[in-house]
Structure formats: C-alpha cells, structure tokens
Length: 286
View 1: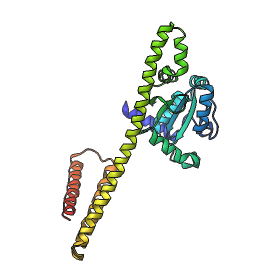
View 2: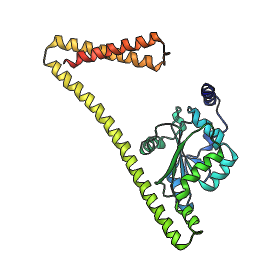
View 3: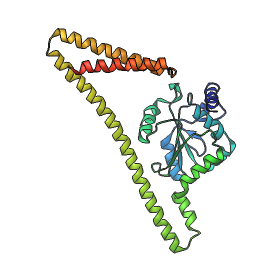
View 4: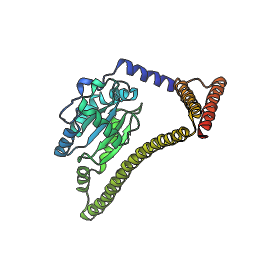
C-alpha cells in the first residue's frame, strides 16, 4: 500500500494535477477564495472583511503531497465555494523552477518559513484577522477531502472574535461573562505559546550557527598549533586532513545513493566510518 502511494505521488509530480496551477495564483492584490503571493494585501483585506488567512507553504513543481492536496482539496468546487466566503489564501512557494516566484517574494518566503518553523511541505498555517495570531496548523493527508479539511480549519477558528460573539448571543449575561473569561485565558496562553515557539526556533538556529563557528575556530586553533612545529608536520597534517575530507565525502555520497541494507554494505559502512574515526583521532593529536 505504502509503495503504491509513493508511486502515485511520483506520477502526480510528473504529470501535474487539476488543482492549483501557475495562472491561478495572483502575484499582487488579494481577494477571498483566490490564491495570492501578496501577504500584505491579504492582511489588509482580512482586517476589512474580518476573515482569517491560510498560509500554504508548498513546493509547487516537485512536492507530491502538495499536488495531492491541490487535486483532492483545493481543486474541488466545495473548497472553492467555502474559501470564497471564508478565507484569504496566501501561496508561499519553494519551487525548483525559480521563475515561478517573483524575485520580491524569494527572501520573504525564506523569512516566513523560518518565522513559522516550517520543516516540511506542505504546511498550512491559519492566521487570525490581525494577520499575526496563529489559530492552527496542519499538513497533507491522503484521505483528506474538502469536507474534512474545512472541518479542521473551522476548529482552528472556533475562538476567533467573530465566532465567539456569535456563540455568546445564545447565552445568559452571566454565562457570557464566564465564557469570555475562559476564551481570554485561552487566547493569552496561545499567544504565549506562539511567542515561545518562535523564540525556540530562533535559538535553535543560533545554536546551529554557534556550532559551526566552534568547528571553524577549533580548526583555526589546530592549524595555528601545527604551524609552530615545522614544515614536515604541516605536510603530514594536511595529508591527514585531505584524506579525512575525501573519505567523509565518499561516505556521504554513498549514503545519499540509498544503498540496500545488506551484510556487505553494512561492512562497507563500518569500514568507512572506522577510517573516518581513525583520521579524526590522528588530527586530534595536533
């Protein structure tokens, strides 16, 4: 079953679908129910019309799951009817064909990916009418339909101001107050969670960069020490370093080729890994 699904997704990437196509995505301006790359315009209309925004992080020309959702959900009339009345839709694309995204959106798209901690495609994030508060996030699913996806989005929007006001009209004044207090605390906690999540993403990036800096500085310090012990040792050090780079690159390329899990390949992996560890040990002596 899993193998058949992967084959189907591969075919979809090759032949395309009836979902979102290049001509169906505006690059400027925004109207409810139509995909646009213009987030600023969508935020403005969202405030005016008091409807939320869905961000679609996609890889339009290579992502099989994205194309599956385009066909099974976004290409259907039920979805088009719903979105026209209820959503601003922003298309944040990371295609292989760079011509599909105007230059003015390339850097912004990367910034949004980092801001919302997007790790895979597609990722769908729903924002409140202020264009900032995250109401919910979801992804693709082979069983998803317009009805089920709309259900997900509706659950995200249950506590928006407009929906809360509609609900409390049915309540007694004392119950209205109690419910509004609960929703207020819920909103406060959600905002704090989003803030902390953003901070964590930023810290993870900072830690990653610091790790790279440490490796570079360790190498610089090592080379400084080597330079103090004469030309013969420098040649020996450089030879070990070159061999380590060569062996590491060979292992990475081999693993990238996704070799079969056989006893022979297992021995090959351990042999190459042992060689790398030994070369690192030799370098550490400097």
